[in-house]
Image 1: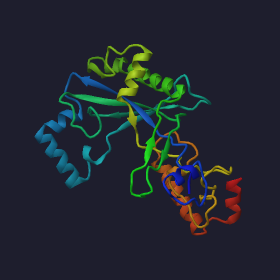
Image 2 (image 1 turned 90 degrees about the vertical axis):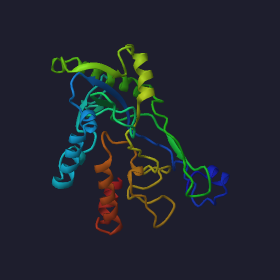
Image 3 (image 1 turned 120 degrees about the vertical axis):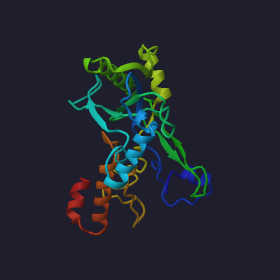
Length: 276
């Protein structure tokens, strides 16, 4: 099941020519900013202190609490840039009490924190395609982040808003320097370069098996793969559009709904109304 041309290219028999399989890939892309603090106030400092590190470990082991029991992003918020519509925020901020060069690398040897700007509803679309007839071979993923001008402008706006926050009176006396994007990045063109260089995925890919009522949709509103009986897709790939924030809760909802459909717990008339 997929685009006939690419399936035949790798010698795979075509059961259903579904060219939209793998298309419509959307993901949340974040632009990180990093601030160095004057005093030892961040998790960077606690991790380098053997006594505090041991204390965090004991808190986790004995009390199920403390820094090791929560995710990196501990504070968040939503704001509206000039591109927001219908009174809905279009930018999500995530703040982490630590800083690294990139995820998975050691914490910095100075006290710092990270705040990222993430566009809620990006318009850029990528695609996912096979590269082999071997089902265990990795696919080719073309994210195409920032391919749309709206996304580029919105993320630059998000970084500028974060900078405005850093200059509020509550931060006076706390901030030593802006590490990323850095004080030399002043123009919007400079900030866009920085967004490209230091940005990255938030791991919310959706949409490559788009649900819909049209002929090109991969799955129907009841999550059935069009053209194939007794086959459904029940995960985040069926989302026609990316949701505004984290995809976890929505993915759980899709799973619950799909399970109810498979078990026959949703009346057929309710399914038709949902499809309409």
